[in-house]
Length: 141
Image (cartoon, rainbow, N blue to C red; front, side):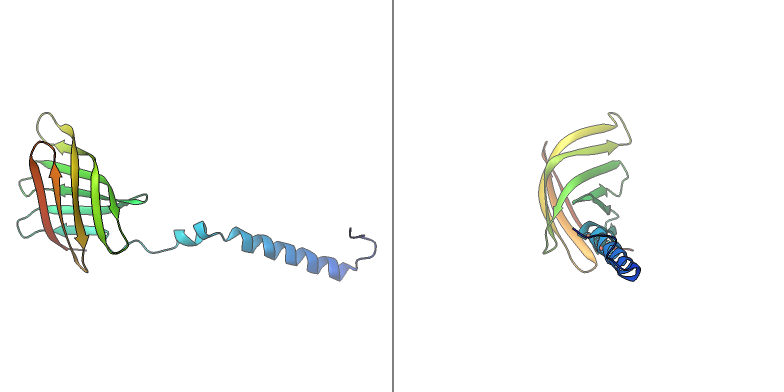
């Protein structure tokens, strides 16, 4: 045990500075460092030549894709798309379909995959009930 009567004031100041420095370094955890990382390059808006649009954002550890056909009948929201390190992605989930006409919202199952390229993306998702969504688009932002 350290006896405070035998420690010189300058030594005590040095100990306090060392302890404060150690606390500061310990507070710089990996979580804090990750918060300053730039967003993934695949986030953005992608437009297809046929007029379809897909908005891509982060949803926690997943990607969120919102695909809308050119006829603007609604939006298909894929909110649990797993993006892999090689920039391929897969989807196997229940998705929300937001329609602009009744019934206004449906929940359906989606299974599919796709890839992000430098400034483009493509995917094919099979929707229960017999539908297929195929998209190839160029990033606009």
